[in-house]
Length: 323
Image (cartoon, rainbow, N blue to C red; front, side, top):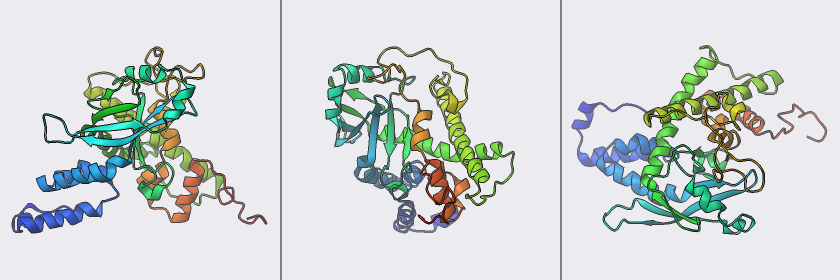
């Protein structure tokens, strides 16, 4: 994004400046993290405008997910945005469980107890923004993280939650920008400062090489952010036993207590960690700049390999009669 000199801005009228800012903000309509974290600081008018846009456009695309085992995912979706009685702001939002029928298979106290265990140290909920929209709705093209839900209130049935949506989005999108900024540094460390060439993906060696690079960058940038988050809270980053094969860090916390996010129908006592979630739900081919310079077909092949499609092109079977 090109810088605008202070002297040039001073010579323009306020109306013209805001018009320029509006054009700039609208240019990044498909980049909510950049809009919220950086462009919202342009002026008081742009801040109000962007926050209103997020309330009306992005908030309905914001989902809070609870995992209750490998095959059960419960999504809380927007119902209303309510104003506080003592304020003119509209910070508090009401989300409701969209698939309440799935609760029939669970013990009645499972979900309420799961939410009672929610804390900074035990993020049983994961947040998504822009699913089925960002990057044309491609799989794993949305923003996903386990940032907090400030002001969280859960009703007795645990089917409805309320929280401060502005603060929740602020945490989510600031970490997203941090992840974005960390990625190039992580990539440079992993490749010893050498520029990786995007070789033809149909070569199995390079196919595997690029896939492992994507996984390493993906996990290591999450480790950096997790450590930064813990440092700000004057604590230590916690790395669990189940995703140890992904993050490669020493396991450093005790087994969780009952109702801490484990599976309701098997013996697993831990809910999925953010490392497990992103390994299934985040595409580094779509998110990382190392892959953005490739041509469309190469990126498609990388993307296909990332999620194990094993299609004819990926398997170099384009000469088969069936193809």
